[in-house]
Image (cartoon, rainbow, N blue to C red; front, side, top):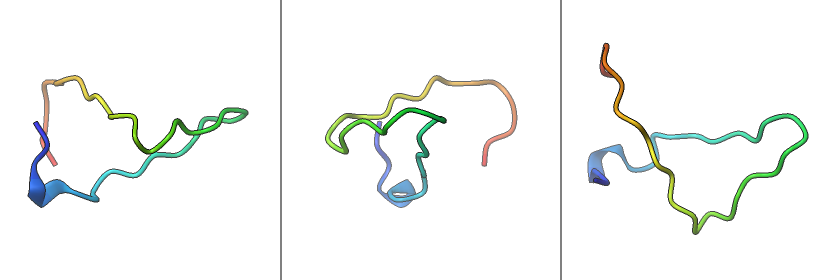
Amino acid sequence: VPLPEEEGSTYVRPAAGHVLPAAAHPLVFDWRDGDLL
């Protein structure tokens, strides 16, 4: 679920030798146990 207060807080860098996908593609994050930022 996108949260407005977190908009613009994620930065994406390409891995060596790869290009970034188009900005129109959604990012998907898995839930992980542990500390929250």
